[in-house]
Amino acid sequence: MTQTLIKSETRGQANHGWLKSNFSFSFADYYDPTRMNFESLRVINDDWIAPAAGFPAHPHKDAEIFSYVLSGTIEHKDSMGNGSRVGAGGVQYMSAGSGVRHSEFNPNADKALEILQVWLLPNVGGAKPRYETLELSEADKRGKLKLFLSEDGREGAMKIRQDADIYAGLFDGNETASLTLRAGRKAYIHMARGAADVNGTRLSRGDALTLDGGGLIIENGAKAELLVFDLAPVG
Image 1 (cartoon, rainbow, N blue to C red):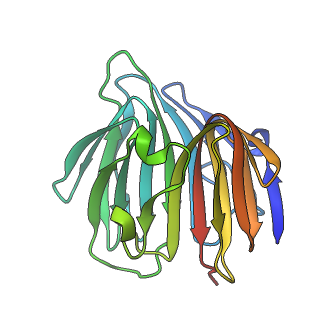
Image 2: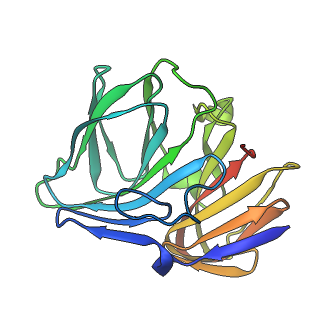
């Protein structure tokens, strides 16, 4: 097993006033040829969106996109006729497929919105677009890894058009969880906030750890909230 630590301060950054972002992979004006993707994982943006601000309607095609809400509320509208508001702990997922337009806004006039915006490359092109939301309670994630996106939709997860299992977890104190990767698979662990040890390596907010095979053990959390991507190799 090979593992690599990626520190938060090495990520790209942008500050547009109403939007502040940290980019784990090349995005917009941030370009690093060594950070284009990790298998099918293409984008992890740590976004802060000011009150009553957001992204106007814009197009997407052949991308698996989800927003994981850390605090505040996100409002979504799209060309498929969907409209929703998702609060902290919730996830909104859109498979852009053959093409869709959508907007994302912070509807709160006095509270900022914090999200992780994540894109994966699909394993099929030109599919019919679709949209779904899922609420995750603290109990769902407390001291364990909760599967919320998978290709087969098992355990109540939303179905994603990629061979990827995506988990969220909350860890404090002596809470611990583990995950064993199947042969040939890789993992990307992103610390959304707080801190925890993953395979003995301390991760703080914005840090990531990549694994090539083997598995992971999460322990010694301090208000830790993290995402784990269990990915099939691509290309």
